[in-house]
Amino acid sequence: MDHRPLSSPPMPSNTHRGKDMSPAELKRTLHRLQAFYEQGRASLEKHAGRMKHGSLTKLIASGKSGTAEMQRKARALAMRYSPEEFAEFVACCEQEGFAIGYSHLIRLLSVKDARKRRALESKAIKEHWSLNAMEAAIRRVVGRKLKDWTGRHAMAPVDTHDALFSLSRACQQFVGLSRVLLPDEGKASLLPGGIAAQLRRLAKGMEAFGQGVDRAMKKA
Image 1 (cartoon, helix red, strand yellow):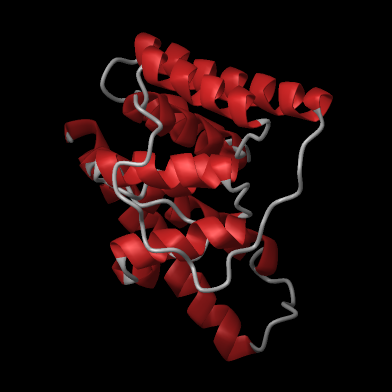
Image 2 (cartoon, helix red, strand yellow):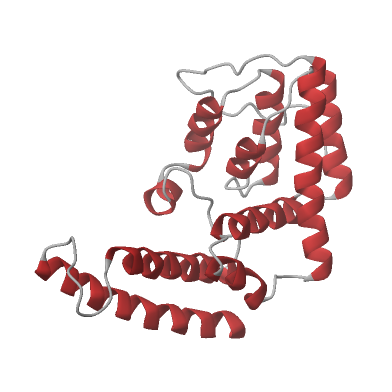
């Protein structure tokens, strides 16, 4: 993976420079990034192509949705970067004395064009971009269409299975939040009566919808 700029991506109008790194801080950051990448590689080797439905949903059901989300992102990173490409990324960071973090790399995955992604990555490292600068540059490259539905900190799904997983996670989170807000039958709720009844109906519908998504995941 050549880190020389292939074509200069549009620069954000207000580029914020990230803080410089000491050699020790650079080493720690690269060590964490390497471990994150290796986590994704190991998961891909264990579950080739896609992770088994139950392995992720069990993490969500046990309240470890954050762990499941990081696993998904690590796998996405490992899918986009071969070991040789990631080694070149690390070498570029070492040469420039600066490493972009997890969040920068995850945002970069939303850029489907490999040449544009490499150009952004190279400039981010060499110019010590902050996360705000990275997001501004990506918006100028891919436009706002991804932001409109993925949210500010979300990553676009990499395939149908990935999109279904995100839906399943959202359903289970909604149901989990509803159970916290809704008391057992016969007990008073802190929510107004009409709102509580509506939330209970929505939770039941979301639970049924989530079960349908889970079935679709098994077939996807």
